[in-house]
Image (cartoon, rainbow, N blue to C red):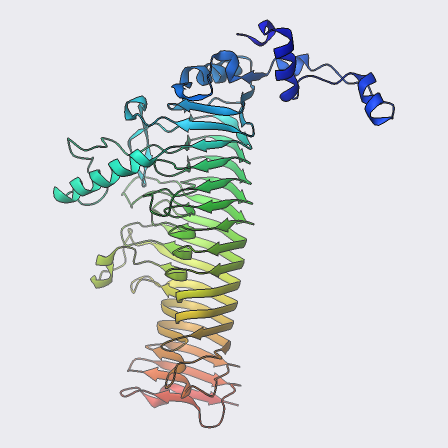
Length: 541
């Protein structure tokens, strides 16, 4: 029933809980012992706050509350904007459609549960894995909205277990029928006719705020804004089981002005991943993701803590990651693309990041996302992606099979790349860098279990300075180079356990300069593998 028709005592208690009823001035004075200032009436404020129970929502977790919650949102819109409140309790719902000038607040103890009945989910025209196509509507869907907030200390639980099972069965059917790539729709008879819902999916929205809430068990990606502008996600907890498929945490997709801060994210896929379209399409303008900050976050399980790509066909630029911790992700920082994506990924900064207990590679910047790319040799064309202007500083790595991998394409190397002030410990393999130009590696310590601490191949115009390796494998070297050009190695230190500071392998290298390095007695400053040209190295005092 409408708020004005509620029984007096029940309405008073409800309004007091929601902060709509003021304590009398005299009562405040009695409690505090101090004179109280007059308090203005909250009647005007009440006109813009909508409790979903007043529209018939039942908090039993069994009866669909979709119509009641949607009615509250529509009433809020009709009033010109305001707040829709979900009180404590468990509210089961099919997809809901957000409105402009609306704040959806989940109070502590409130649970918004996604229906497990696939038939409750209508379809819309949306985007999935970089392709515009028909998709299931998400639990909270917004299209062409302004001024949208989702807040509170409550929980949104997608109850996605059934969707994950259906996805695995659908993928098995696709493989059986030889459906390769993302473009073909799911075949007839699939458990899933369309791509799965997300929990929060926004299209072409402006001024979006998501704060405080807990998000669990999405059928697929948890928060997916597409073509949105001015997004702030703060203090949000996102969780999905480590084996849940495609349950990315936050996926800004062709978005601009995005701030992600103070979040904890642990999922079955990338925790935060920035995208902008699947592949290059001649004559079609694709929209970049740009001006994005990720700060003060902690990441648990997931394929990566912070990732870019591999869908980069609209381009990605101006991204910073700072003051974050990855503990247990497969990769820490992972920037990925592939031939055929096209466009540019540029202006990336990562600083003050701790990467520990990583299951694969701590820092990976690579353009070979698909396995077939490695064997292919192609010429640069419009569909070739470009990586440039990446800078990593003040990074700590503790425990990982591989510390750092940087690999550009032979036809389009990574340009303007730097690693500075990094400590890499407890890794199987150290740092490998290939197909880069204009790179700088400075004040980096790598202690690896096997192989050289630093391996550089097919690089040009590289400055290497103040490298350290206190732990080097027996009979190994600190730095190995192959097919390098215009490289300087200065102020580096070799431990007594190694046989050489630098080893040059094979033909094709030239213009390597060594200066001011510290090498113990019995350790060579430079060694040459069989077939290497000894004239390519110049030593300077």
